[in-house]
Length: 78
Image (tube, rainbow, N blue to C red; front, side):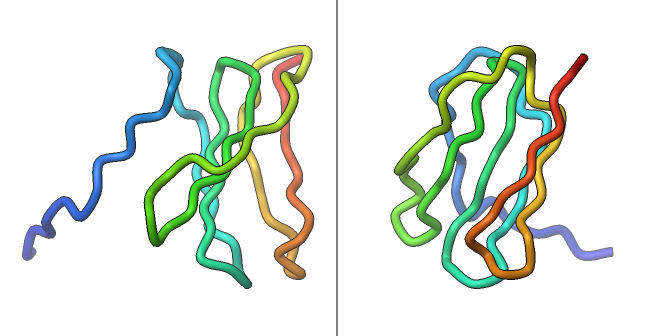
């Protein structure tokens, strides 16, 4: 199997574990979820964190974009 190469190393502004990664089906956008209770949105052209949600009550376990690319679902730890 061929090995790939690292294209970009994202440095999320958190010390907590990243729990999910999801790519938008309609935009050049990626979302990450983490144990710090936030969902962050990344511009895939600049690799910059461009926005984040308000903190959830508990860590965000996973995320999923809806097909329209405008809605994102998050699953939190209960």
